[in-house]
Amino acid sequence: MVIEFLKFKVDPNLRENYIQKDAEIWTAALAEYPGFLGKEVWINPDDPTEVIFLIRWTTLELLQAIPTSDAEKIEQRFAQAVGHTHELVQSGVYQVQELSQSA
Image 1 (tube, helix red, strand yellow):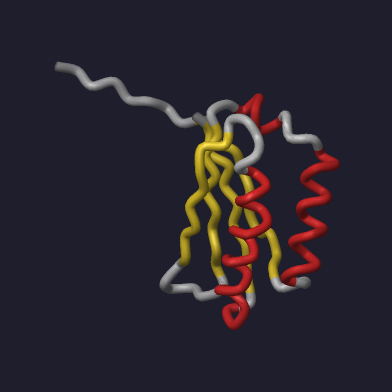
Image 2 (cartoon, rainbow, N blue to C red; image 1 turned 180 degrees about the vertical axis):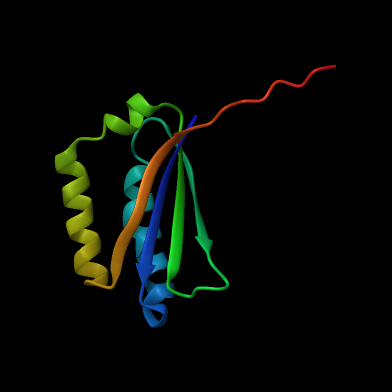
């Protein structure tokens, strides 16, 4: 499994709408692609501008198989819905390492 990590700075007054529109547009669209396992939204209680998305994928290859043109169209729909209320401040993809339990 891989984790796509996305950290955004969002206007705190618009945060709830931003999260709702993300679920309606981005999460719904990603759910249509093979390999999508789910998404978590993390809110920082000490920084109301910080929103983190953790998106789980079965493999890196399936994440990377999403056509760039599809992602651009989804982002255009999202930007129309929320405007310029957010800024991507950090992103990365991480491999989940399973730990073995010794008896």
